[in-house]
Image (cartoon, rainbow, N blue to C red; front, side, top):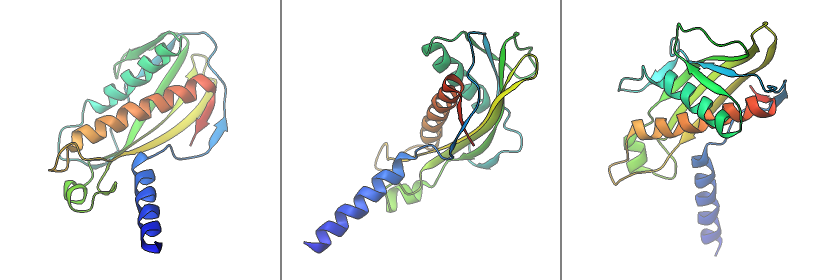
Length: 179
């Protein structure tokens, strides 16, 4: 009976670890208030990278995810490519801090969330007049095997990008920023 309880505890811990909840504590900032939001393509310059495929589109993918989620929440939001000019209103700028495709071998041989992909981004939200509304950092881990060969690092990182984008949009919408 005791070994069964231990097995359940280990499985529960492994499953919880695979969820990869947001890290950092919430710090009150300011909410956006009806003005349009320009989400500038995040830079990948200086990111810690453990990923074997091209990742030059990840900054744009993240900005697109943030803008889409802000629109879902009722805000006027647009994506601005790097080098573009944001509209007047609120501007979100940031950088991708971490891209980690994880370990396919660990996903196959160990399982239980081992070898998952990770993705992190950080940045700031400012009004056009220079007033800072908040700064943020978010990191997520995605685990799971899409097939018996351990699944794709790209799929796991893409899953993280979607979740980080939704997290950052929530921070902007609520004014509760995590660092």
